Image (cartoon, rainbow, N blue to C red; front, side, top):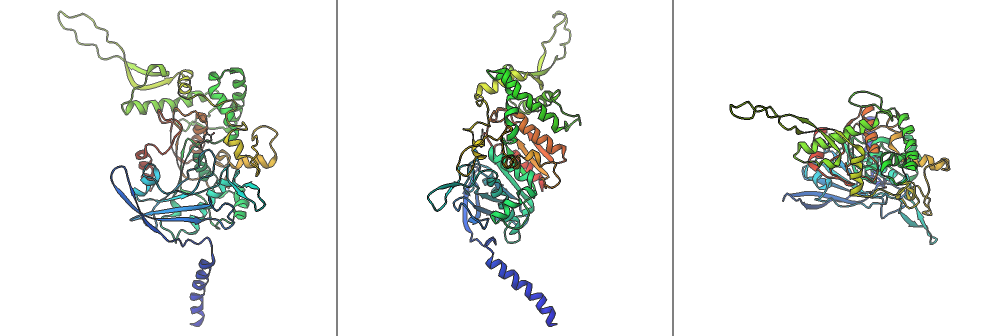
Length: 461
Ligand code: DHB
């Protein structure tokens, strides 16, 4: 009897002791809060703020997370992990907003986590009066992975389910969301996470919401020049750079998810156009009108010939009527429209020393680095690779999320359409559930059409 007694009590004592001395054990005090939504509803929730999620904190102003639990949440509620990373800069932990997906998530009964994470501008003083930049790639991503690990490590102690995490971000944040979804648990990141003192837990997520992800950075310049070659002043130079994208693209061996057909540089334009016409069709079906000058071709039909009336005209040929179904688009015409709304980025669009991307791949002294081309060191190549979800989606060592919601506005020229289309296509080819669209009239923005997003989220559970 005595032996059984110790077997029962000892583990409890040990567990208690670990929790007490464990800096990564969740024990925050909550604070009651309210959020007034635009529809007049008041959402009540508990806020847990300023939680450290790694033990080797390098930037105490940034490496914390906030966690919010709405009234009525349970241990099984999904968790929206929203990052506000933009421009690959650092982002501090924030409070939920009635104006974006965070407030809406609380209203829908989801728990919400808004973490801080380091970025290309994160600097701390090293004790000798020098600033050290600690958030260069892939440290910002590693911070966010550590957040997921923290949530899973503390799953039993916190409301919401770490097995139901949905990441969400826009632009560079959309890329971070894609990376969290694609690269989870991959050994490439393990040394970093260990060095940072992340919780010993897995970092896979259930779903990733990616608005206009600025991703596939090492091929983004090629893709940009390939798509916009006829809009460039120096068409020849653009065509040359764009040609390299064709080579890369053919090696991806993507397939059209609808037909199974292998996608090559020969048929890719048609495939891309099918996403644009789908966007136009959705817009028209919702009552929108598209001007002919944008380059869309619509199917036409002839209304029935009016019946012959004695004394009336013998034969009236009705005029063809434009249907609401876009069947084709003149790409040059549509792309000139996109460019007329916002000028293209300079050449090169990404790997230029003034870009957020070169700063991201810079060093601890904040000296920006070119990250494409043959001059990049082995170490830099590895860092670039770790920031590209495309390399991990079919890697069996990564645990890629099963569910994806990806949006790239049909007017967004911050990166080219193929970047988002190929991310979505690769995920579909690898058997993931992907809700993908190029929403009409949207430029470089996120968290729009929340009704649509939360319809999708509700269907996940
Ligand atoms: C963002 C936008 C860009 O055009 C870019 O190259 C990188 C990041 C952003 O808004 O996050």
